[in-house]
Image (tube, rainbow, N blue to C red; front, side):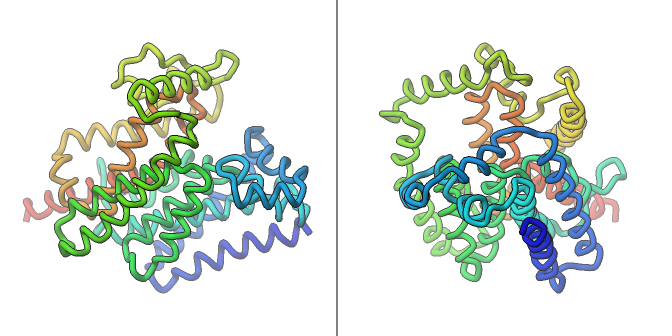
Length: 383
């Protein structure tokens, strides 16, 4: 049974890739297949060498009764909803954790494919930095794959965000993708759905290449959803009132829970100034944090991202941002919101990297766009 379903999931991933063959040039299509098998390798590694929450997300549903499954599926959010979501493959079908990891790896890769397609459709030429092509290099960054292949919330949210962004590029044709992404993300982590509505709602209203009616129509829908789910997010976070004091107390409490001294990657961020908290969220672990092979790889990756980000800020960042499409702007707003919120509450490097992965594609795609824009301007200036 496991061999059959493992094979089926891998084949479904290949079928999904093939569905875009007519839309991609040969090089991009070939690269997408390489990314797929690269991604699956991370899934295999994660299954056998990383013992985390993902094991519980797969094993706990095996202990659920059918009535508990129905209740959790219909009434619950977050972790209990995840148990219900895994009930059929884990409990009814009796699939192993390895097969479950492969299934989630394929789901995570679908999300990555959507980001890959967004990059292709929004960036006119392959950008270079110091003579090196950045695309598809940045899509092979290890953490982009490592945290989107495991059984759990992070993989599904990565999938939802990619699908949502891709859907927005042709909203009328891809409405089903948008609705599915919003519903699923809301049931997993409603605050992420709120962040998306705020970020892309603000982006759409600020864009200039769409009609006034379109801008206000989509802005109204997104703000309406945001207003509706805001009290539900507060309830989900167990905050009685949305006051500044309560939100600050929640952040402090969360930081203390996630900074426990017995965790391998624990750091105390309570005394950090806000800029250092933001840097920690975006670019650590750094070389002084290395204590394992994964942290070494992460520090190399973060160094590359930091170098590229610094280069962006030194070369017309606002100008390139203004010229970006509304989906790229939306991803940057999403990154900013997520960074501000999570950098104030997370005190564990492992959890920071995991959470950052939802926002990392936005940073990567903006980096690609910025250098593409700068390269084009330089070429036009020199001709």
